[in-house]
View 1 (tube, chains in turn brown, purple):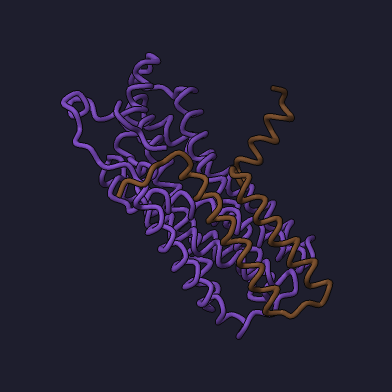
View 2 (spheres, one colour):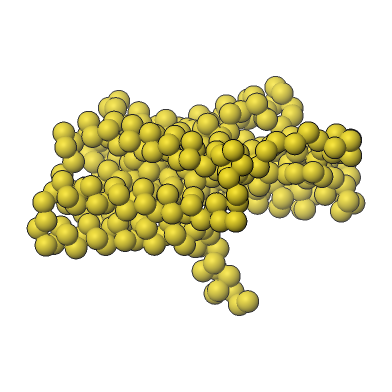
Length: 72
Length: 270
C-alpha cells in the first residue's frame, strides 16, 4: 500500500471511520442544500435534514446486529 | 460568557477529558517502565504540537473561510465526530461492545514494553519519548479538531473568543487529568468514560446539526433555543436505540478460573 492510499485511509478513519455515517451525513447536507435551492418549505428541509442524520445512526447500528440472534 | 460559549467550554472540556485519560494511561506506562523524564518530554512535545495545530488552523479558518461555508464545514465535521462517538457509546451501553478498561490497557501495555526489553533507566530514552509523544498527539488530535471547529464557529457567531474558550476547556481537562493522575499514580479507570463519550456525542451532533443547518439556510425555530430541542431529541433517540439493541447483547457468563487468574488476556477493550 503506498503512502497516498495510507494517508487517505488514515484521514477517512480519523474523520468518519464508518461509510454509512459518511454517506448519511453527505446525503443530509446535499439534500438540504438542494431543497433550499428549490425553495422548499423551511420545516420540511429541517425535518429531512435531521431525519437523514438519525437514519445514518440507526442504519450503522442495525448493521452491528447482523448475525447476532436476539438473546432475550 | 454567553450560553453558547459555555456550551463550547463544556463540550471541549468533556471531549478532552476522555481523550486525555486515554493518553495518560500510555504516559503512565512509559513513566513507570522507562522513566518519567522520557514520558513527560514526549507528552509536553505533543501538547506543544497540538497547540501549534490549533493556533495555525484556528486562525486560518476564522480569517479566510466565509461564514456560511465555515458553518457547513464545521457542521459536517461535528456531526461526523458526534455520530462516531455516539455510536461507540450506544454500543457499549447496550452491551454489544466491551467497556473501555484503562486498567486492562495499562497492564497490557506494561507487559508489551517489558516483552520488548524496555527497563527502568536514568537517561532520556528515545523510544519512551516517541511512545508518549505518539499517544498524546493521536488522542489529542481529535480534541484539537473539536476545539478548532467548535471555537471557530463560536468566534464567527460574533461572540469572539470562541477558540480561546474551547482551548481553555481543553486545558482545564488536561490540568484535571494531570493533577488527578499525579495524585493517584494509576490508570484513571473510575472516570465514567462512556457517560462522557455519550454526552459529548450528543453535544457534537446537536451543534453540528444546528450550525450546519444554519449554513445551508435553515432557519431554526426560535434560533438558539432550538439547540435545547435538538439536545433532547438526540438524547431521546439514543436512549431508544440502546433499549432496542440491548436484547441482542451476549449474556454475561461467569469468568473461568483461567480468566480469573489472568483477566488481561481475556478481553482488552478498544
